[in-house]
Length: 252
Image (cartoon, rainbow, N blue to C red; front, top):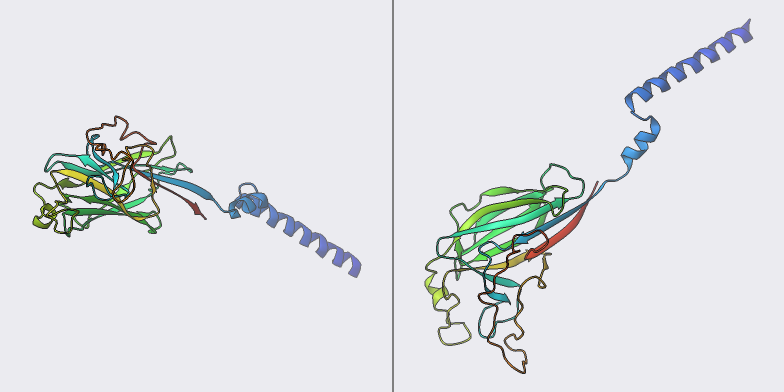
């Protein structure tokens, strides 16, 4: 009798355990294997390409200051008429195809020696990715922020947000720069956009736009007069022909 009771209790316990296992399977779509898959880290590739913010006509190729010859640097000057729009333009891509944003841009008035606007870029987790500067520009919307769009198709989703307008005229100091390469050499010779990567790990896409063959302070056998002014680029808003690019991964 005692042996029969013990055996019956063992069978009852086995039945209860089996039932509990079946219930667990109802809550885990593919059972324990699904739970293991969910535990693996997801890796998302993100790419942001920032394009020229004015017209498609170059005033000066890659430079720091567009003197004759220019100083070496990572800015491009784009032709623009006074009071015309200056925009933050980008293609944003994330490999998971999610509709969630890549991040946000925030507009700052950074006027100093010359008028200036800066867009600060942060990713979707509020990590700083860098800044893009728009010199010889002013803004009506300082401290305003906006969504940087994205998707997982081709080069991604297009963002085109007006962040300011081209100055005309410039500040007095910017028009008569006592620290320029000559006496009262102006830092500004007329309305245009000087676009530069102010901060962050931006790749400078020098192969896409004109690079002067001679820079100030460097030896040139035949110093050229061509700084790229007047060259037009029909592809300046096409995905893959950005002025600056940044790529990163999210892991979770």
